[in-house]
Length: 256
Length: 256
DNA sequence: AATAATGGTTCAAATAATGAACCAACCACC
DNA sequence: GGTGGTTGGTTCATTATTTGAACCATTATT
Image (tube, each protein chain N blue to C red):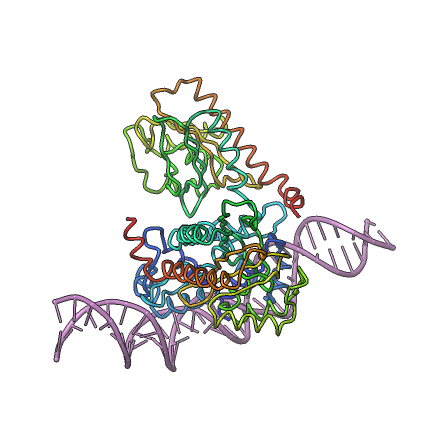
């Protein structure tokens, strides 16, 4: 691994649960020498990628990352691009539609449109979606990097309902079907009485970067409705992906 | 400069205005050899800090940055912490209140609350604030690291209006007064007819990391209002700083 | 068809990264 | 108030990585 790779892998040691780490700790976890670790940290600190707490001397991720992330968001407006299509889909299906983005190691719900009816599936913004037991998760895994899939199948596979698939082989099969079909179906895998379909929103390199999903009460959902929603959610995901990747330049030009 | 510094300075070439750059362009602007530039880009791409458009072969900032930025925000919730207080201040002053964060070498506006009245000062999110000629800038410099102050005074000191202070000595004096007073006053230094007060939001080590400011049309602003707003903005800044530093651990624990 | 861009690659030479050994502080524990 | 085990931080000869001129293949421009 090159030096910059080492520096970045140092950054990747910080997590939500452990957002501040000491020098020795970082050296131990990274496997680099203490001197090396420190030199890398100093280089990162010099550009605001890492900050050091003056009191504890511990290190944390720096504001420079936020700044660059903001620039990226401006160029790659995931939310702005996707929300109109989420809204359209919610209108045409009259069911809950939610949009998720891959975060630390799971999907995070970043937008939801609820239908104007009493009996509906409720999803909150910020909600975390397990990869193995939700339509969004399976759709994501169908086009995720191999290592992500492996990590998921090797990790804890909690059963949220009696219907949750928890055997790696079964999940793997579901992923394969999703890849062929273009959208995933999750029948009460996460919550009793809820059936969802989802499709992956993909980056320019083909990798999934998020998902769009329709969730509905199973009681009023026919097999025909599943297919219909599946095709619709797939079309929406494809459109979002295309707007994000393909014609994005033209979109930006039009704004300017 | 070390290799990681070079890699990062490559990232810093991307801006809102030019979010996508080609290899030759990056090499030219960075001053690195084309081969070096590419090797660095590949290292960055491998960790999601940079993405390459499959079509144009141009490079852009990657999703890995967003991911890390999100982790930082979780530990250091500048926006979440500050926005409620910005809103309160906007309500009590009935004038524009804006929040800024220090970026590479200048302040960036990250949040704004406008009052519900026609005649008001308009500030946009993302707007850059020169350090020497805005209330926010002076408030920041009053508690910035010495080298930042020196670099600012040694750099270009543009006059944006006839009232802008452009002599290092005058700016230095203004910084000193701000440090004593606790808040800065900028009388039409950046825009004609606008008077602002600001105070620094400070990190645990005492260094400024951002500012909060109230901007109002000079025509309707009395000397008494200035003092009142100054004290209010100072109190808000202190409260934000305390919430960010002091009880932050407890805040995080409570969530878990 | 010629020209000058572009992105991308190679390999000997130059340079920057490495890590064992070293301090100085701090903390816990007998 | 030692004693052992931490911690963060530094040094410098050895080593491995980075470097860049020259190279090719494509793709516009002229």
